[in-house]
Amino acid sequence: MNTADSSAFPPELLRDVARRRTFAIISHPDAGKTTLTEKLLLFGGAIQLAGTVKARKSSRHATSDWMEVEKERGISVTSSVMQFEYGGHTINLLDTPGHQDFSEDTYRVLTAVDAAVMVIDAAKGVEAQTIKLLEVCRLRNTPIITFINKLDREVKNPFDLLAEIEDVLKIECAPITWPLGSGKAFHGVWHLLHQHLLRFAAGEETRSQAEIIAGLDNAQLDALFPLEIGQLRDDVELLSGAANPFSLDDFLAGRQTPVFFGSGINNFGVQEILQALIDWAPPPQPRDAGARFVAPAEAPFTGFVFKIQANMDPRHRDRIAFFRICSGRYSSGMKVKHVRANREIKLANALTFMANERVHKEDGVAGDIIGIHNHGQFQIGDTLSEGEALGFRGIPYFSPELFRAARLRDPLKAKQLQKGLQELGEEGAIQVFTLDDGSFLLGAVGQLQFEVVAQRLKDEYKVDAIFENADIHTARWLTFPDEGSRKNFEREQFSRFARDVDGNPVYLASSRYNLDVTMEKWPQVQFHATREHGEKLA
Ligand code: G4P
Image 1 (cartoon, helix red, strand yellow):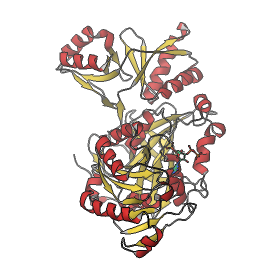
Image 2 (image 1 turned 45 degrees about the vertical axis):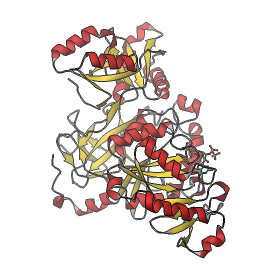
Image 3 (image 1 turned 60 degrees about the vertical axis):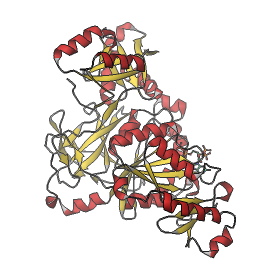
Image 4 (image 1 turned 180 degrees about the vertical axis):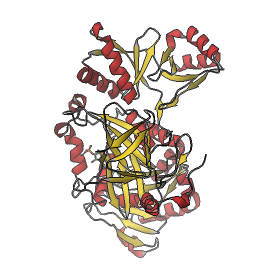
């Protein structure tokens, strides 16, 4: 597959695309994602006062228009987009839901970024949700920058933390900074590339730049940190022989992660993360659009929908399709082609995102996100172009981990239930499977998705549905060598056979063992744990 000839790219677009950095923060709840987001925005000048994001996090349910489920639980199901300027670059930070009950949205946001910052709590090490999120990043070899947070607390040994990341997450670590002490005796980090100490002083979190002390043999270090400096010198010597040197190529290929230590709440080590994003994280890259790869500085506008947010504004009961620009330039009022629907639409009042609300933005280039009002015309994975028949790939459905059977309180509402589930399934709020007997099975990766769907069925479709536990362990999409084998399989496995919202065949396994046995019995049938949005399976 070819990309367009780069000499033909408009120079201004090339320049603007090269300045873009689009990333997400991945972490287990409580590792410090919100705190880090806030400090990044502070550096970007996008917010003036620390506490803004945090305040928003806790007051969201009171001030915003989120759904009842969110209000009750005081959490946000949504992810938003924050854009800010730093060091001559335009940075897009895509927020992911912060609650343990994360959903498919979290996964999908990761399909729209070019890099991720992984936050790890230094006292806890690698936690469950980080493992899941990293697996998703790995599908696209997304480059990862690691921030080991909370060094101001009693923490695990830094060598053990690196070993844990390498063992559990199977990604090579290249330490860039290294802690001098920890907990009450945390004094800063040694920058292994710059060969200087960035000094930490508690209570100085408003300083934009830490004090720098150069040279590991500097007598000032002995005078200031007599108890800890010996350990740092030993560590640095050990690292010079044993640690992986940073390799930009390995980082960009997703094989190696540069590791930084710090304390988000103290605004310490955060600037180094921003610098790494600018210096090392990639600008928007060419993307697979089915027929060909699309380069970000090509003049024609293209992009895809990676997330649909319902009820951003309950007064209008609208939905917003979040759209990642993959090439060209967005301008308000432009006409584009909705490739799947095969029709032209006008992008009249798309939303652009700035963390600093005082700035209104009317344009965007590859890497930026725009929000388009959606009245049901968009599905996850939909492509927009200026006429070319493209279909961006790499936006997968994941096999759900939780299943519920949907049942009606009022059997007369069967039509509404079907319509509601079909639309919510197409929108990507939940995965909907129809069984041979016409009953519905819902699949999700987070429990909250069920609650949101129950609420939306009630509000938007006037259907009171009950979701009951289903004896399903996992689902696999199926492809068959021919029509005959599909029919055989469907006949013999009818009780475990279903169709997804796009009519694709699916096997519903009651256990891992059941799946293994079935796969063994049907070697000619392929069982897939993911499928592409919009993909039609045989
Ligand atoms: P999350 O978005 O990943 O869920 O994490 P969040 O930033 O909300 O941080 C979780 C808790 O960890 C918060 O404490 C926060 O203040 C704390 N924290 C974040 N970074 C650091 C750090 O560098 N050092 C220390 N010691 N703590 C840190 P909380 O008690 O839950 O909230 P709050 O009362 O402080 O607001």
